[in-house]
Image 1 (cartoon, each protein chain N blue to C red):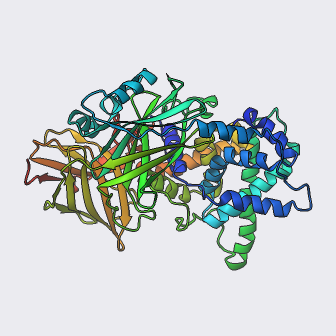
Image 2 (cartoon, rainbow over the protein chains, first blue to last red):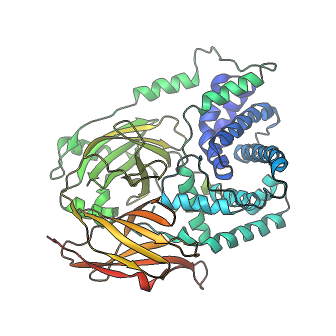
Image 3 (cartoon, rainbow over the protein chains, first blue to last red):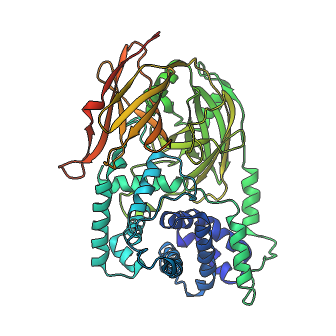
Amino acid sequence: MQGSDLTPWLQRLKEGDKEAFRYVYDRTVDNVYRTVALLVSGRQDIEDIMNEIYFKLWLSLPNYDPNRPFRNWLHGIAIRQVQDWRRRKWRKFRLFERQKMLEIQPEHPRTDRVIVWNETSRELLELLNHLSYKLRIVVVLRYYHEYSLTEISELLAVPIGTVKSRHHQALKELRKHSVELDLEKGGDCFVH
Amino acid sequence: MSIEERLKDHMHQAADHLNIPQDLYDSILQSTEERISDRARLTRKSRSRSIIRNAFVIGTAAVFIVVVIVSSAFISPVMAETLSRIPMMHNVFKLAGDLGLKAAEQKGLATETDYYDTHEGYTLTASQAMFDGMRGAIALQLDEAGHPASLFDPFARGQSEASSLKSKGSFQVMRAFINGTEESITWDIGPGNDAESAIVTITGASSDQAARRPVLPETFNLTLEVRLEMIPEPFILQIPMRKNTDNHILYPEAEKSSRQVSWRLEEMERSPVSTRMELVLKETSSDERTIYFEVVGQDGTEIKIIDLYANDMKQGYRRLDMLYEPLPSDHQSFTIKPFRYVYGDSPDAWEKEYIKDLELTVPIEGND
């Protein structure tokens, strides 16, 4: 998902080219979809957010500076859409259960999420669900997208100190629930 | 490996298994078009020289799927042709397989194959296949116009910010189908003997893990749809799989309990390539950490785990279906050692905390 490969296609997309929309989608969807699915429960919610992201991608394209990494720009859009969705959901949620803070309550295991086969993966996702959203997004950006803490502070528009403390807190939480982070299947012969 | 590297690995694994719905694009396109109907509508360009169309034509022309199986005993003309096409073609199972795959290779249970698919000058070859009824294994190798190309390098990831952008041809994701459906199987990928190769493992798994591990049919057509970085067309490999081992199913009397945890071995299956243990775990402990089961052979050597499938039963009960390397055929017993992981004193050290009360040595009856 490197911007340089996509540049001519982004230009065509700006001109309203449907083929370019498909091309940009194909080149980015795995990465974007998985980012959203790691942050949000529920297949329908994920798809709604995906709709928003690609609509916003098209809408905001004239503002994209090709000198900046496309990946960071697109992730910025994705994160904003997830956060907008959370705000909308929070408003609805608060009508029913004011006392429960969505921000700090762990979410229930995802019953209708996309299928996760592997035991280690399943446990990691459950572990992520134990984290509050604010900690989880730092973990996803740091360990799935491998952004530096500075980049994460830019993407989330929060101070670097806040990112550091959330990162520290997230690792502490994960260690508390510890478990499978060391499950080496097959050791040297077959490392999964 | 530090906790950070481990987290990266597990995060990528978890993400790789999140499948993108096939109809998502249509839904997004429709939604986007509707919402921009009062803006500039997306238009289909009527250029005669569409890059996509040209790429499609080239891609289609470059697709070759060869369907010839070669005996593992001799190098046939087809294999010789493959070897000349890829000078670096290796015996991946022998060099990088677990003990079971090494044994399969030695005993002639692995089949040399030459199924391949080519896109944009990259050729992905399934060069070996093995199926013992419990797991299928396929060796994949990648080359670019006859030169080895980087397919799967677990060490490149996470070394630096720049390397998080994988090189062209790196493994991205795949789907696996048996007889055209992906309902009851799962896949896993691990490194081969070098960055140009990888080993794919196929096992039975139900999609919601609500039932016992599904049994794979004795013969099936395996289709791997592999996506590599920066190559839009998937590589399609169709590989006929046939079980070629006589497996022994055993029902050893083996159970152990402590105050809050108990386990019982329900079934055990052995082939020269794998050992499967199906075990029911009952747990009322407040310790949230998962219990794992290490298996140690008669001589104290660990029999390493290959795959773990689990499903919840009634409250407090969980069925674990675990695949291990083969138990050596001359062993008269093995030991099951349950443990939990604990974060150790030394930096980033995860250690096994064995639960001594739950250990048990199990004699093997009907050994051959």
